[in-house]
Length: 350
Image 1: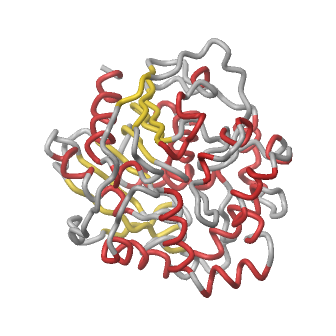
Image 2: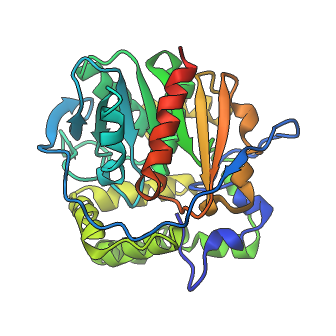
Image 3: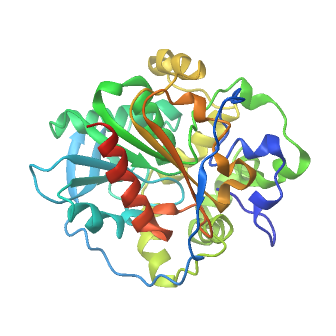
């Protein structure tokens, strides 16, 4: 996501910077990639809060966490796991979920570590936000819920997590839907400077690198994150109730620690945990994803919206969709298009 003073960052980023939509990732050679075709949509309109249609949030111990998650749909239906990002929560999928349930899917929407009712089982566990741990969390949840394989879809941190599950555990991922494409971070590549305007767009990443930034985010979580929402989705005229419904997820006792560690780890100024180093080394090599995949871009992705830079990272049946007039929170701004992509990607696996 991003924030600048009065403009949409994606319209101003250089070509180099565009490759880091929703987070820096590996620079790729995509000379042979075929751009996707735009799917024209009307600009986002005001979306009023519809309340929590998920019912009671379930809790289960999985790995190092007690995970809070919504579950909707038939218990024997094919499983879809939906993954949110920062600064969002499970309600990004509140309008996607009934569309999927109407198709017979069992939909699982977990709060990521540091969000909502997901908490750590031990006070001694490092509040770790490095990229691989979120995928490990998903695999642990699937094991506890006895889910062998699922369609996995997400945006922002959730897209990166879905990418990683598909790359490292393809046997657990039936199909993939990823907003902004291939988002796997390479720490070495991430040390390369961007253009000044691109660096400006990442102001919060550098703010979070300071103790002042940590304190400022802690003190101003709601205002900070509402600003990110507005700048990441400038045409989405969400109401206060919609934002407030999600903002409660930021009251999690580990929220600030996870967010700060995530961005500091990306800048190589915070260490990850040694036990995940093997996973990270595999990810730094930019593994190709073999499962059936649909990637989605929106106005947020700017010049990178054609998907050309990452198309070669997907070796299975693959297509790319471009949503015009839509910002970063694709599932909440355009739920039908997001749900359609999941159903279609699942169809690729048959």
